[in-house]
Amino acid sequence: MSEDIRVTGGEHDAEAEREFSWRARSVGLAALDTDDAELMHGWRSDPTVAHHMGIWPRSLTAMRERIERDVEDDDRDDFLILLPDSTPVGHIALTGQNIVDGTARIELMLAAQHRRHGHGSAALDAVVDLAFGELPMYRLTAETHTDNAPALAVLARSGFTQEGISRAACLHRGSRHDLAVFSLLRPEWEELTRPRAWTT
Image (tube, rainbow, N blue to C red; front, side, top):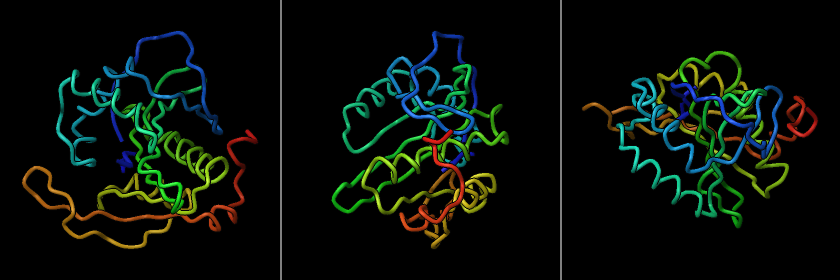
């Protein structure tokens, strides 16, 4: 997870306003589309993101194909994180959705110039509210490098509990990295006193 909760950089040309699928206190979420491939490619090529997410740059064609494949995946929902003026600031996804068990994973990536403005926390809270308020999820998980302080802070701020460490679980640039494993359960979300996404 990258602020980077699995976080990034790049500007998007001004476009017609995107339709928000879901709103949060300071951002909106719009369904990811294949037209967003170039934007996503630029973000994922950011060295900080590559380090925290343990990825390496792929071609634009591969990114477009991945988005096309993911759009057809019923077990995941991908969103662009947008400011009220439709400026894209990142990507968030609810992946590995298992409706029977009520489980899913969250991935978050923010553009470099939009970090440390609270957008990661707002988007994370919004997707958590979607998972527990509109979907029958009971347990959400997220992972990030144990040295990714911004992501650790975002997860804690949103009510997630670190439940363990996956030792040496990620190989990146010739080194093994530990991953912090976080979770949030429905009863814990119900006890949170913050406003829900649908009340903003």
